[in-house]
Length: 166
Image (cartoon, rainbow, N blue to C red; front, side, top):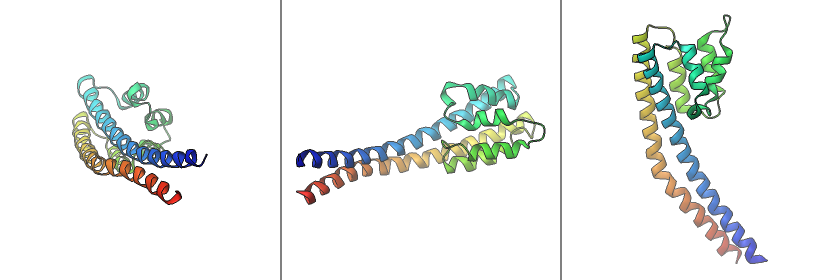
């Protein structure tokens, strides 16, 4: 019975390390999705001239971006008496899937979207997409550096607990 408990302790510690490594990878995937979202925003705006409200509605329903609740929150909150900038910012800050680094970039983008002509919006989207891509690259480098560390640390803590409890 004791061995089963020790084995469970070791497996739990190892699983925790693998879970932490997976969370790092998920952060990177989320950033990549946001880069793709901004790129697709730009494409739809450039080639179809889609107004901002329709653009947000399309992407709120898109299966690749359903995890980003800020899109549907902004669509639902559009009203005459609500400032689009405040709506955008509060929706981004209320979305749990948005990382803080991405939230800062998206909030800055929200101050420009819908306030300039199409060329200005396209330029802003390109600028913020490149900033988002740089942030994604930073997270990828961090992910590569820490992912293996978290796994090894989980295994080593589990082994240490086994040794101490034997």
